Image 1: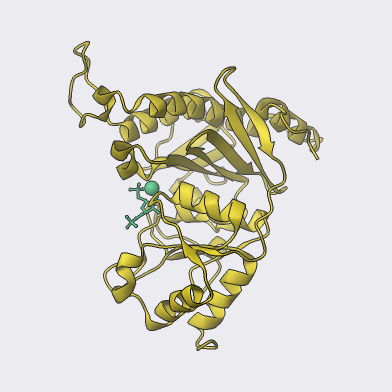
Image 2: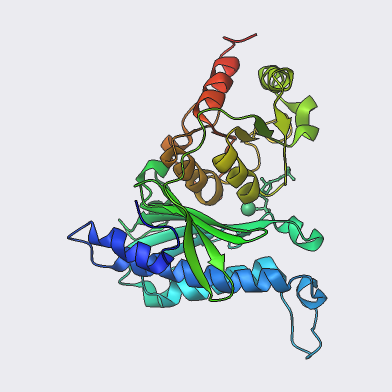
Length: 324
Ligand code: AHM
Ligand code: MG
């Protein structure tokens, strides 16, 4: 196991050495995300200084146009990832269409990302995060994004919380790196993360209870009867990170108003499911494994249940009507 405190760049390079045929392209791709994340983290820290909170089109004290932090983060990710030359195509929650950057025409990878998830939290000084999912470029068309999540080469998230943490997987387990702001380095703080087999927390927007399927209502009623506690930040990165570390279940289910829930498959559900499964947990729509879904468009939504193995198995039994 890598030593605590190891710098993320060194960790990425050491992982690459395990593959004699690696060209270094994935390392450069991950480092581009890392440097964008550091800049976003610095801006998130400044967000309380009102000008950046302005609506798009507002001007700051220097008379410059200010962007909302989510749009700023998107532009920054696009610039950094494009300039790295490693990505043939980019898909973002903030962009209607896939972007094929000029500098990425020799890129071996494609990336889907949510530049600043949970952005309604910004104005109230609560956690937000960035999520990313990397696949191989195959055809060089939009179709490269419309594949099963199990084909991901890497996925991860950055949580801008009480500290900033970068959590990622390349399919060899999950590692977390905390930003040391005094030196500007992400240092290994959570090596080889394993999600507890069972938890005591459920994280779901319970205000939708009356619009849920009866079986889901029963599942949540049973959790409460068993003494589970409720935690919900309303930012997927924060809520999933808590479940990853402490165990339990995070859910954004379908309901009568939103037949496919709210979360997007390729840049929210799928990368988070890859992390959770690599840490020993499970991720499902309630009917099928999230990592087996083949999306038909880039902004497709999916119901999400993910977390500790035992808790998700209990959910599946309840959804099949085998628990009363
Ligand atoms: P966003 O991508 O527009 O920020 O929305 C996604 C967020 C997730 O982070 C979070 O899990 C969910 O929306 C919360 O939704 P709700 O307010 O309906 O509970
Ligand atoms: Mg989002």
